Amino acid sequence: MEALAARLSHLDSQAEGAIRVVMFYDTLMRRRVDLPALARASAGLAECVAGIQLHGTGRAIRVSPDGSHTSTPPTPPSTTAPITLDEEEIGTVWLERPGPPNQLDEALLDRLAIAAAAIAERYGPARTTMADPALVELAISTDSDEASRARALRLLGFAADLPVRVIAVRSQLPLDQIGSLVCPTRPVKAAPLADVGVILATTIDQTRFPAGVRAGIGAAASPDQSWQQARTALRFTTPRQPLIPYDDLGALALLAEIPQDAARDNADVAAIARIADNPEDLQTLDAYCATGSLRQAADLLHLHHSSIARRLEHLAKTLGIDLTEPTGLTRTRLALTTWRLLND
View 1: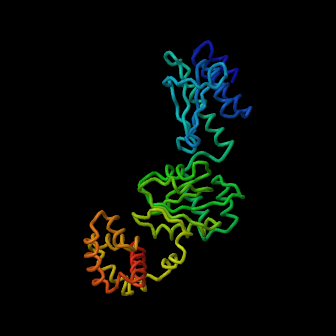
View 2: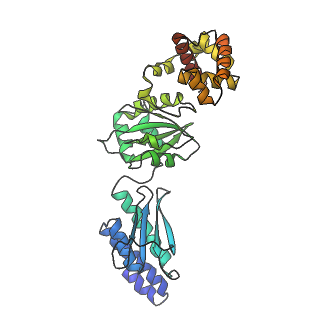
View 3: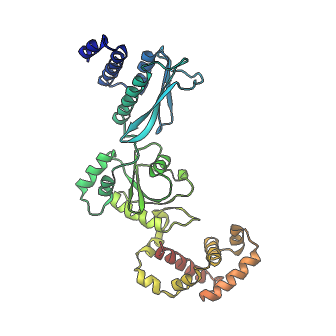
């Protein structure tokens, strides 16, 4: 590097400067510095405030040229660059230069971003969320042997002593965004498989699922069993109940194991299918089954309770079930849930 820089110095001073920037960051990486040290060295080299922020932590590191961490209000960045790892943007680096950008600022930020990505990968699980679908499928497949599954999990960044939970997701939102929200402390990986998104996580914050996401959460310690449970739980989700942990299903999970032909032939399920063409009737029945109360169902639908009473009277005749009796309500709930599973 030094010999090349010497040869270039008489031809192009900017080229020599760029080579020296590369050498500077190569030296830092050989010394295996951490992010604060990287920011401190970059600020000294640039002679202005340098900043680093990883999306996974949300914390910005800003260092002054004298090497001190600065808490002064940040000035608008004069130059920025994305930190990318495995083709995913995981953060940003920037310089806060009072005047116009230096001619070497672009080269400096390019090397700073590369170094920051390498450090993020080295000192913890990779900050990228999207994973190779083939590896994810190997980790959750019932056809995988334990050795192959363990290797896949290791390659995905999961430690052998950490339990891995599996989430089955249907959403228009990007899977990496959902994964980063529900498991902000990582590690977390996501990949699309056919019509269902898969998220693997060591911890799950159920309160952080965004609106519009339907998700089933597996409970088993083994990823392959957890995946099967997550898919089952996903089938039970509704607009009213978009998030369902498998453990919360209890005996209801048995409904998912009923053969489809047997379910369709059941008289109660067939009766639900007959009223399903009328969204108003289906909505009323769903609200009543969810609350078990005429007045609560009316509040849920923002209607007068007398209107709900008339609808339920009509539905009871159509279904041939007394909805005011506990047994009739239980039958209707089971039939409605089974019908939903058939139409999942």
